[in-house]
Structure formats: structure tokens, C-alpha cells
Image (cartoon, rainbow, N blue to C red; front, side, top):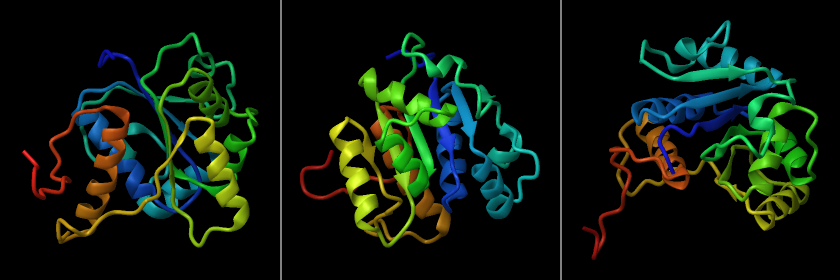
Length: 199
């Protein structure tokens, strides 16, 4: 798929704003276009965890990286990403709250995040939900099964320790790198296990 086709990133209200920042940084480093959607709870999250007062790409990235990120209105279910005729390379919801998981699992599309997720499932495009809540109730587990059966990917924020991380950024990068892998976005981050047979 062409690198010009955008990736959709949605930020919701579960704790984990640094994961969203790292994934966005990875997409920018890979020169990918991004459509960003932020829920009202996601805006609160960005404020509480990253100190972002007015969500814009520069503030979220935490740097002056050159980027091609457009922020789409949360309530605009007529935006481009709400249509299957609009090409996209996939979508990641990061972090994905249990409430958002439930909306997606049950096909509720009354906002742009949930509607765009519906589009990913019906068009058979990658939909990755980086769920970050624990422990999990039976309701959440059933919702995860429902999303998985519909073609989505549940990707818990669960970094590995086999690379002996030395910092929180190492942990963020490992998880973000796995998400980029699932989207088919190339990166040079050191996240791979080098066991027997690895090149």
C-alpha cells in the first residue's frame, strides 16, 4: 500500500497518552500521513498525562517534528474517514478505553472514532485497539472476542522485557514498534528478539 495513504489514529480516555505520542512520532518518522481524532476524554487525558493544554500535533508530539497530521472533529461523522470509499492504511485506537472497546464491539457509530472503526472492520482494513485497562471483567473479555471475530486486533499495552529496557521510553518504543509492525509501517526501532534463526 502506498505510503501516501493515511493512517488513522484515535486517542480515547484510558491512561496511556505516552503510547499515543510514541506511535505518532513513529508514523511521522516514517513520513506517513495521519488523520488524528481525539475524544473529549482523550483531551482530558492529554492534559493530565502530557500537560497538553490545547491538543495540536506539535504539542502532542512534544517537539517541532515536521509532520503531516490533520486533526479531525470528534463529532463529525461526515468526515472523510467515516466512508469506506476513502482510502486509509488502517486505524489504531491508542489508548483504547473499555467504553470505546464496547462501542466498537457493538457497532455504535455515533462519533467519528467509532464510525471510523466500523469502516475499518467492514472494509477489512487493520483496526488495532491498544487496550490499557486492568484487570479485565467478563464484559471486556467478551467485547474483545467480538472485535477479534469481526477482524480487529486487540493489542494490550504489554511491553516485553527481553531487550532489558533501561527506561520508560524503551518500554513505550517496544509497544509502539509492535503497533507499527501490525500497520505495516517500517521503522528502525530496536524491538526484535534475536533468538536462534534471526537474521
